[in-house]
Image (cartoon, rainbow, N blue to C red; front, side, top):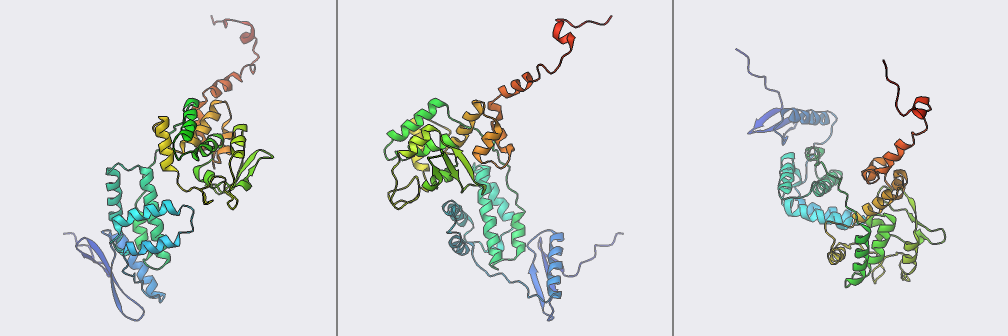
Length: 360
């Protein structure tokens, strides 16, 4: 008969969860839940604790802090970030879900269940990925603050992000663009959107780049906008069209504010989503968001025959692969490539014979 598996010292089961036990340098015995049903993971944790004991390290003891309490300190630590408002919104949502959970209680199963529930409610994978990214960043910070050990973070990091469909490409026709700009002027309390929309259509700049644009970065003499605070941490120059130059030159300037687009108090706009949706409704434009103005800029250029490398540089893409999504809008470039082969062959049969000779 086969022998029963040999018990490994320091490992034992409680229900379905593995626990470990080890003795530190002072001879004190410790007991700890590995918080996993995997024996291999529990064994790896045991080896880590034994190594720490040999090195004389004091066993890590996590503080019993609730997620909602930790979230307050986390938000305070990121208040200086430009994306604070957007990230704080996601943190508040996570607090609604995990607020009464102790930091040490996070594990793969809990986060995967959260992911499944959010997807079942129809949440877009891209939005869910941003929420998970914030959660993981919070737990990274908790490790830095010695509130949890790395094993908690490791379990949460096992939860994979969802594949995103970034192939959506919605752009305006010239007629829709005219309606949109007109609606900006005609919609009450939305007049400020007109120059912002025109800037987006004429430069392809991202929303954040536009709203943070300063007059020091607008060069009317040479006809350029200098984008220095981009998403990819790289700067770029964008030539101004005559339409854009006239639009920006007609804007009033605030005496104490450096920003091109500002509130009455001189501060830059931080959220134009509500007013932009009002304008879209008045213009009768559906299935459209502000970022699609950037797609519109790129699409118009490609359809006018501008090469993808130039479009890439204007958009500030890191690689040409990001710009290739617009290539289908210029099918004529393939025909031009084939036509370029004309004249490369000088065979007399091709030049002077309408029918090639056949073999007998």
